Image (cartoon, rainbow, N blue to C red; front, top):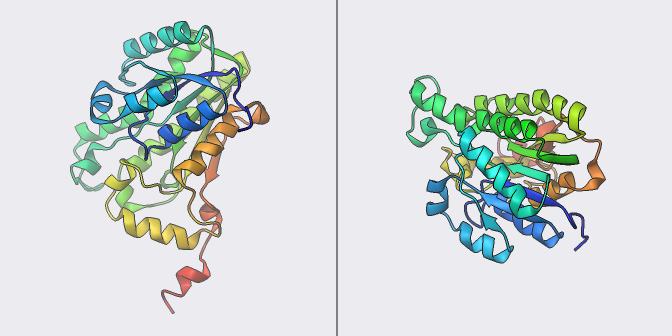
Length: 268
């Protein structure tokens, strides 16, 4: 390909199967010359196919619960041992709502479920950044990216409390990103991706209808998981060294649309 990540080392959170954005990103990072460690929660590793990805990308797997500081410290320390030094890039591709899984309405949630989803989907990113920061694990001009969705800014009723989680995730990226930039010249950004047919995305009520709506609304159409992987690689590369504290919409133009001809045709 382009050798955009030649010699770079990283950690990729959240790959589950070949539909995952993290999976596609790992494949592209490998093609662009990177070495990396793959990680996910132990239950997700058992449920998914991460060993296949690890074999195909010559990577090692380190199980870690991203809500556990102890697990994250172990992950970062072992990753630096395996990779032979500090880290150039990190992808946080983690999200889960128990209320969505249990069909609990936003207006009538189980607050224990809310807290669990908040911890997994957003606070985990703060914990990842915390451990990386205090261990001084990132190389200068390194790049940290988390995946988000536009429900953080606009109302998508069936996205439920994940919208709140994503809003908090984006705030963490900006707030912690300031300290990473000031102290270590490290970039922290979020990518606000189109609705994407992943295991997590397919769990949202009415997903098929919405992805079709988004496709008709976006002038370029929805961005696929593979498209998102390409965009993520660009943020890991040295071509975007001065991009930080940004929430970057990667959605075929959906985020700036009010209406499209294709959608209007359905109502006329």
